[in-house]
Amino acid sequence: MAQKGKYVYEYPHPAVTADCIVFGYDGKALKILLIKRGLEKDASSTAYVGEWALPGGFLDVEKDKTIAHTAARELKEETGLKLSVKDFKEVGTFSDIKRDPRERVITIAHYALVKLARVQADTDAEKADWFSWNDIPHLAFDHDKILRVAFSRLKQDIHFEPVGFELLPEVFTLPQLQNLYESILEVKFDRRNFANKMKHFEILSEVDDGTPRRGTRTPLKYHFDKENYDRLKNSGFQLEF
Amino acid sequence: MAQKGKYVYEYPHPAVTADCIVFGYDGKALKILLIKRGLEKDASSTAYVGEWALPGGFLDVEKDKTIAHTAARELKEETGLKLSVKDFKEVGTFSDIKRDPRERVITIAHYALVKLARVQADTDAEKADWFSWNDIPHLAFDHDKILRVAFSRLKQDIHFEPVGFELLPEVFTLPQLQNLYESILEVKFDRRNFANKMKHFEILSEVDDGTPRRGTRTPLKYHFDKENYDRLKNSGFQLEF
DNA sequence: TTTTCTTTGCGTAAAATTTACACAATTAGT
DNA sequence: ACTAATTGTGTAAATTTTACGCAAAGAAAA
Image 1 (cartoon, rainbow over the protein chains, first blue to last red):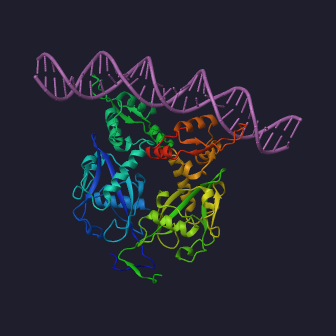
Image 2: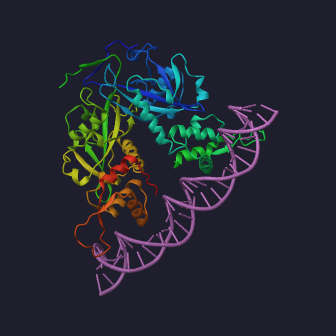
Image 3: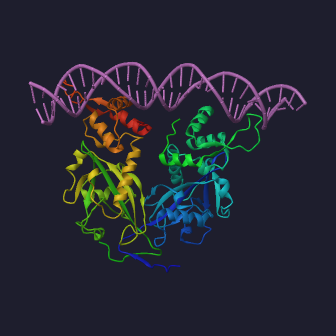
C-alpha cells in the first residue's frame, strides 16, 4: 500500500472516479444495482458510510488504461459483476466543486445493461443489491442526480439502437419486450402497432419449442436474430412511436 | 504562483483538463477554432510546442465550479472568446493512459456553437485561428480524435434541436440554412423539401427590408422566431430527412 | 364447476408524413 | 448578347404511422 503523502504535484489535482449505473430487467420493472457504502476498507469508505450508492471508485492512475477500465474494475471489486469495458457507455461528468466533502472529486458516470438472470448469481449480495426503479433509496453524494441523468440517457439511446438483447433473457415474449420498452420510455404502446414495428425490423425469430400452441393467451416465445440485431445496432435505427 | 511541490496526496491523482471544440459557420463551410501551442507561459505549454491544438486547459481545483467553467475560462484566456458556461455541451472524456507525455491527464471535451461574424473580432489572432473543417492541420495530443468525436456528436444533436440560431447571422437565407445543415450532416437535400420542412416548424420569419424583390434569383431573407425556436429546442424536434 | 374477465395474436382502413419532381424568373458569368 | 446557375413555389405518389375489433384460451372469481 502506498505510503501516506507520497504523491506530490506542483498544482492541485482532483481525484477522479468512475461510477456505474447498471440496469437490469426482471420481466416486470427496470432494476438498478446499488452498493452499501462503508463495508470496504479503502479510502473511499470514509464518507457516507452505511448509505446506498452507485458502484464505482477511484481511477488507478498507473494501471487503468481508460476511465472505462476503472468502471469495469470497480464494479467487479464492489459487486462481483464482471463486465467488459465495452459494455459501458459514458453518461457524463459530474464535477461540482463540493460534491464530495473530502476533497475535489470529479466522476465520470457510465451505464451498462445486463441480463439480470445471468448476473444475479454473480452479485455479491453482502454489499450489493438490486432495486426497482420506483423504489430507489436515498443515495450518497450526488448519485441521485447521476442516476436520473443516466436513466434519461438510456431513454434517449433506446431510440437509436435496440436494447432488448442486453436486458432480456435469451428467450422472451413480445409482451415482455413491450413492457421493457414501456418501462424505459415511460409510455404505453398499442400492442398491435408495437408488434408490427418490431417485426418490421426483422430482429425477432420465433422459438419453436415443439409444443404446438393451443391457445392464443399464451404468448409466443422469441429470441433475437443476432446477425440482424447487430447490423441494426451498428447502422442505427429509428424507434419512432 | 504556487510553490513547486506543494500539493501532496496519499494516492496518485491525474491532472484534469477541459478542451473546447468551437464551431462557427462562415456561410460556406463549418469552421473550428484552434490555438497554436507554446506561446503561453504556464505549465501546459511544455508539450507539443508550436503545434495546433484545441483550446483548453487545466481544471482549477479550487476555483472552477464545474469542468464546464474550466472550459469557459480557458477558452477566454487562450482565444479571447467569452462564452457562457451553458453554451458548452459535454462531448465526452478522453482518458487514455498515455495521451499526454508528461503525466496522466484526462480531458473532458466540450463543444460550443458561435456566430462567426460576431466572435471573429474578439478572437485573439496572435494565438488562435479559424480553420475550415476540410482544412484542419495535424493537432497535438489526441485532439484529432476528440475533434472527430465532437463533430459526430454535433451531427447527432442536430437531429433533436435546431442549431441554426447559434451559428448563422441574425439575418440569413434559406440556401444558407440548407448549406449549414448539409455541411454538418454531410448530405444533400432537395431544396423544396428542405424549405417545406423548415417552414413547417414555424421557426422562420421573413425579413421585410422594404425592397420589393424583383427576381427570384435573389434569396429571401429570414430570421428566427426566437419564441418558437426555443420552444422547439426544449420540446425536442425530429429532423428526419 | 361454471362464469367472467384478461390476455394474446392477427390485419386493415384512414391519416399523416415523406419523397420525387418541373417551371418560370433573374442574376452571374462568359 | 448569350449561356449557365440559382431561387421560389406546389402537387401527386409512395411510404409510414395510427387507430381500432375479433376470436380463442387461460386466469380469476363466483
